[in-house]
Length: 505
Image (cartoon, rainbow, N blue to C red; front, top):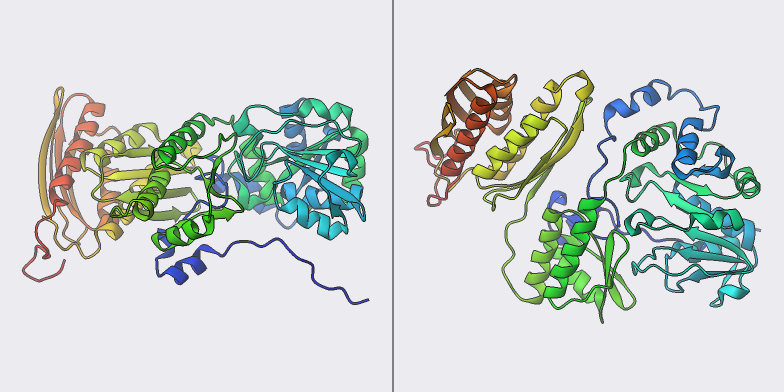
């Protein structure tokens, strides 16, 4: 009999398609509809993939044993209790076919992750309301899309506890494995590897053997396994993410919206006609997701979430929409860097690449220039900080060049002197459109002059810096602050013309 297409999981449109639909640059679109981390983990860099790429012509004959061993150690279980798969979804579909083909499936809560229903469709199973009468019970804990933390029931059928968001809740149900439950985990959420598609199941040895016997061989790629192993080797710190969740929840409440208490990295806001609000936010570049009875929004980072709040104020309170931060990425074989930049801003700055001194220096520059800057990424620091610092400044410079556009209406010139204890720095800036750096910095902490040269080349500015003192740290910091304060003057609004008799820079 000729097979027919089933009702299938529907992915939202791509960022490019949405941008075309609403007439925006794709970089102006911010996705609050995916429940993913705001940025990739620090371990997701070219060096992590180097060996896997060198061996990409080979199969992994051991079924990624180092990764499975790391997972087993992480959860204090035996290696034979770990099954690796392409995200949690592979297991959801497989378990539906394994335990409920032609049978019944229930979910806890009843309003839960839609993939359970599609897995039931693929297995020819029926979704029922009573977990006590189901062959297979999926417990989404914490629950998607509401963010709640349901109790785990005692059931007669096979129990599967989907803990995709458990890291954000700080609790788990791993103790139920010994009594026959199957626990699902993923690297897509807290670990920030949604694109890698790596998940795993934890179960008794007997159940794990049954599960793996039904899997296709090596459904996870060697590149994804390498990323997952590196992520697992780095301790998770969700302190900032959890604090941001509470901040965003409070800000939404101040707007008259009342999100449910969340144990995840998203918020569910009960409301009538959520589709209407989704449609109103879309032309502003904020992509959210409507569900029956409410709106779900991902918690990202402060800069992104402030953009969402601005968009909501524009829609709900008819307030003007402030300029959006420019988004830019620069990826090389040595570094992966992303930047969000608003010029002018309010001095809200966060820089993190692992190159401690120069992260701090760029923070100083952007703060004194009055910018909003969030620059994050990783580089091959095991070889030294040269590549990371150079690319950090080039990335910032390229973003600044884009943010300045044709440079109309800017003062163009700026000058500042900054002392720091015994050190004194003098900086003069011209937003000339020509890359010229004249630098006399002594003593140089190591890469101060090179950092400025990299900025000048990519931002297309003229920069003169003279700095001296006894302490190299003081000299460097005074220099970055002076350049920032000079940029603040040059970036000041001054009419609507390009400050050149040529009419352009």
